[in-house]
Length: 367
Image (cartoon, rainbow, N blue to C red; front, side, top):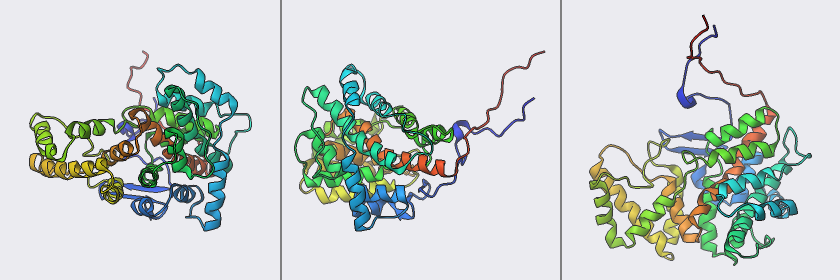
């Protein structure tokens, strides 16, 4: 009979790797990227700088930043066969499935094991283009070519919206994308590392990660927060609407988190960005007010539960303010998280051993 192993449903509490990429401490509300507070990185740095930190292990010098930015810009264009595939996918196929298919189509005989940093940069550069290209096809408009004058986040908004974006919106979305680049050994990251541990290629690992993020228990979407804030509509209506929701046994979307038992540090950083922009953006202003009222009422109705604002609340505020459709929320999450996924794949490859956990047999034995 097989030796029995201690069982942890869902691998809760089980460490499956050593990493220096990030620390997620839900009890104390800490999120660290390679020795830096993620909150400070989101407030003071750019997407490209933080990607360099995760991929190379340190924040870039001016020369290193220019080099990475140049490589990202040079790799945005999609191969013709991928563009053709994106056009052929039926319109009713969801955007995450399209992204998964588009990334898979980027695989070629040149991809092998171990993955290279050039492969990582190329894939991270192309994922926003896949989303924007498909979105244009669905809108019946001609997809735009990437704009080499714009940075990573600004170009993403440009390709989606068809015009150079508001710098304030770039700033807000950049902060969100930094805060979602990496988040420890979550389900999609684990899936990517498992694939890589078999000595499969980068594209296969990231395709698996995207398929995992697609699941509603992982990627989800902040669209329910958007719906709540839109239903409230005005500051004056915030307290009566939220109070009615709580008195009827409803949940306030965007409050509470499975991992963080205290304030979500990502929400803290996005709150700072939102406060900077709220004077010039009515949506940010309303969202900030709704959060304040929601926290007050949750303490009143659910004392001691520590239901703090989570990242999805301000993600919704950012997405809505920059004008992204609800069906772009999770794909945009993936456009950012590919940085963390690929950093984990590189780390796995550097000291690889196949990931093969055990299972406990609970069936009957033959007589």
